[in-house]
Length: 380
Image (cartoon, rainbow, N blue to C red; front, side):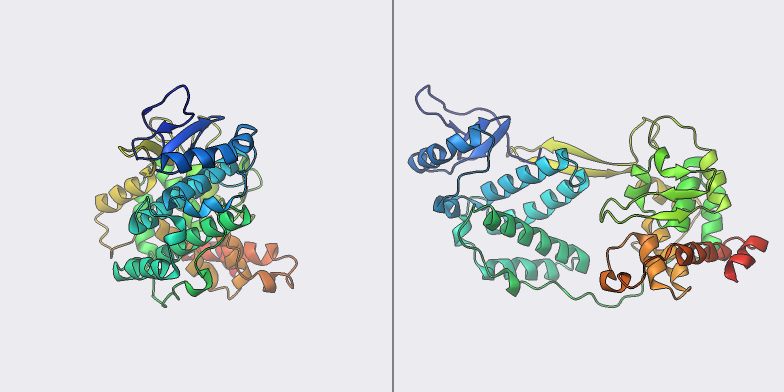
């Protein structure tokens, strides 16, 4: 769970709260740790105002005192809420991991024990500028901004706070048009020729269906139908459905994978190739670390075959390569379907079914690797 935890501090039978090592008074209620500030008298007052609601498992009682809580406390409460959503299956664990990592940076920037009411629009702008000066990728900066806005909106909607910075003033960074690298046909053939069965199958899925590292790690056998040569696998990040055709090379590669468990791909130790590991740091904050064994293994393969590429090229480049090839069909809806993006929503309302176009565009991409009669027919 994305929350603070630590050793018990000073506690008496009369005073209901415990002094946490971070300096805040807290109490564990229904398996979760709640924080009420560093001032003993105010903390007790906040606890008494909220106790009945918390012990009943209900939302925190609305109170203007919420604005006096620290940003770290507010962040923890928000992440606790997100953790409940994970347990309910509303969002993926990796989304909680991403939000925890993003918000941690912001909390450290404004200082953890700073009152929420003291954080201004200027502070948010300064944090955005800092990320830009650090030359963070446009997507990374925008993800930080989105996470902060989501936390504030949640706090307002649940009446945890009575006011917040002017979030509309914190604009997302407009991405610059940069040419991203893709693999050449020869590079792909070299990688396929030296890859082990699992990696070979994952490479084919990256090219055929635009699957990324996490996609491959989360792919289950129930998503794959080798007899009909199709994959029905919604994208975890967006929830957008992807029902796509499988090339015969992809099917053959998948048939070489033994079914050890419900997952299609497993490491030697039986773990998912991409997983989230949680550890508690010295401050009592649960730290989520993403272990991407697939990226590491693919990097080893590139090094093994002597593939020299520019910085940033890795397994995800297969997905970009697949999108580039499919885009040559000049059908943006097919590319959207392949990548599982939630874009083109308005245009999609006028296009009721693009499954045939998607299949044709994906099968047309096969000709960039394999040249045979079926590739020619797909191009017709």
